[in-house]
Length: 110
Image (cartoon, rainbow, N blue to C red; front, side, top):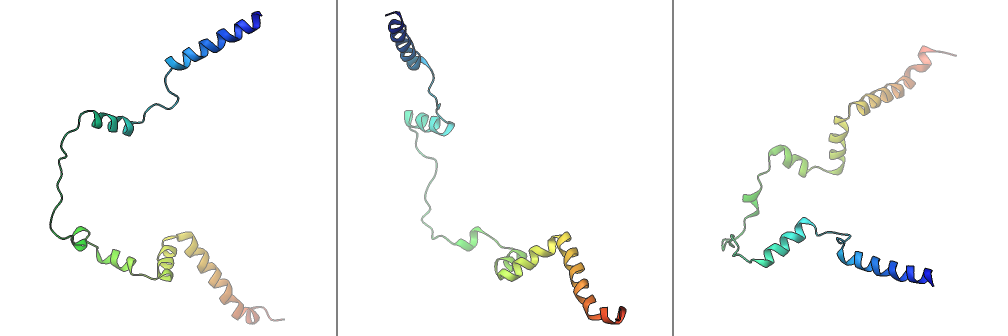
């Protein structure tokens, strides 16, 4: 009897606490701004232009950017590879090892 009474009281207290407590996920900043904007609507301060849109007037591309944009996949890989100094050094060592194969017979005959 006593345990069931404690259970009922516990359930009642937890229900009341849930009603009083803050929500688990409070409103984010954007949601609060939307609620505030809807509460007091004001006219928008922008307009739509009637002129046709010219995409070339928006973005000016430098010659270096244009060269990169028009480059093939191989060219982009080569440009990226040249920036990596350790990789270039390793490639030089590897090429020297392969070239040494051509002259190894003369340096160390049987």
